[in-house]
Length: 140
Image (cartoon, rainbow, N blue to C red; front, side):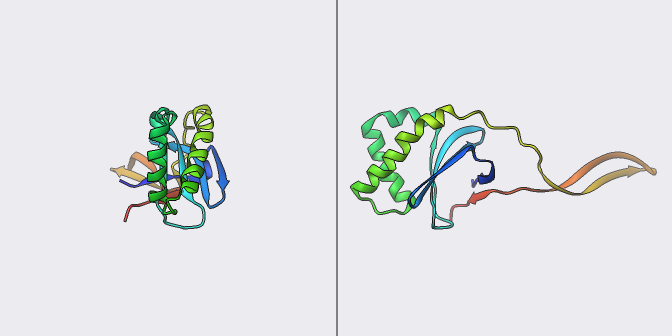
């Protein structure tokens, strides 16, 4: 199942060299998404709020940093592990302080209206829209 994130509506984003940390929501849950800044279509590493407490355990954090380097396609060196650990560890307070997901303003751009008629009378109507899309990750 692909995950879609509208980067225009992210709560916060920070650039850390070649990594972009995006604070946003997936399925209504707060999350921190690490994205390679200069490689389109690269995999993302996501820290969901429901799992964020586990990153307080140094052994868990170390294992996840190795996994993050693998997922993000960056060299699995001690320096990169520390860099990812620092981004995640220093980003957790911002993740916890994020507001709940804002209500969507609209489904997209309206381009017409659909009317259902019976015996010359309108019995139903609905706006036709093109849904706004943000960044999308679709696994290969």
